[in-house]
Image (tube, rainbow, N blue to C red):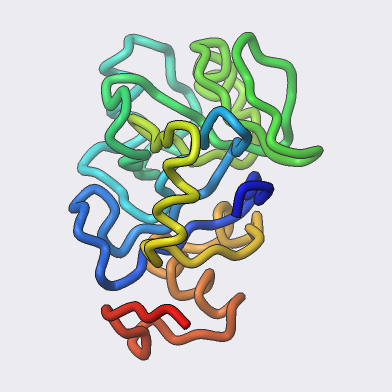
Length: 186
């Protein structure tokens, strides 16, 4: 398990997940290395819209087609800070380029561009992120807390939030309702 790299993978919370921040969650892993992992929950909208967020942070917002899109609970770390998962990558002040197609940006310049020009064209905005220290995610995987599968951008950007977990499970060929909350080890 030491050399596993889950960058650009989904973490699917197993039914026995006890942490309420991650129950029935689908996490997109934006970075995973020897120092730890960072991701955002992509299927837990909160009671805040894109237009509402822009009003709160006092950034002009002219793109009415995005007004009612939800903001998501990205995880329990820095819940007062916004993170934008997006494609195309673009050039922003503070971006983590996940791969050649997707980036995670936390600088205000992306919100300013989104509010005036609608770019980048595909976005998922979260408050907070999910983080793991060195070896922590590997330990959780060893305890069967998560299933993993390579990520599919269409699940992130094209499906409604309530369909994302099921779609990620289907990538594995597994029905969530058939998963046991009891883990076994051979």
